[in-house]
Length: 169
Image (cartoon, rainbow, N blue to C red; front, side, top):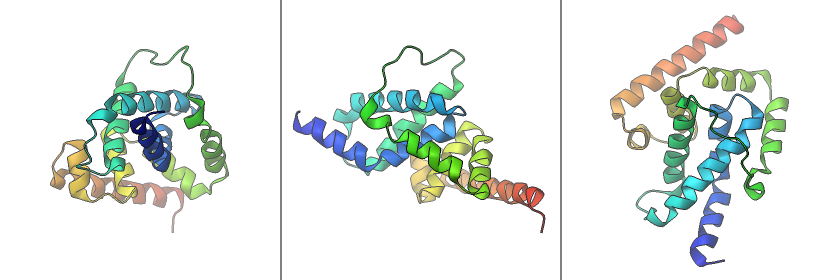
């Protein structure tokens, strides 16, 4: 294996949680998650030679993962059929699915609320929950920092209202 391939595999392994978060947020069916992860990995690999280190690898990876997920989400056609899985990277999905199925009601409600958002708001809240600053989110998504702030505030308010309806005080 060449050094660039080794570096790519190392960086993906260190940041594979991003793959799982994006796949979980954009795929309602657990069986579809390996397919979206595979497509993200393909796009990451094809673009890796263009990665110049000006941003953190995780930021670059999020940008590609979200772009792939959003384009697949918007696609009307059956995107993945008869694809071979990249087993080394998707084996963790069983653990993720199991963890989510064993998670508390609040976590399941949170993921359900995230899944009910449109694709841009879903991307915004995922990045926010992962600790990205508004300026970084704006750069990743191509919208203004003010718009990011406004949208995240609205999402948080919506989540709070939804939780009040489910669990009145």
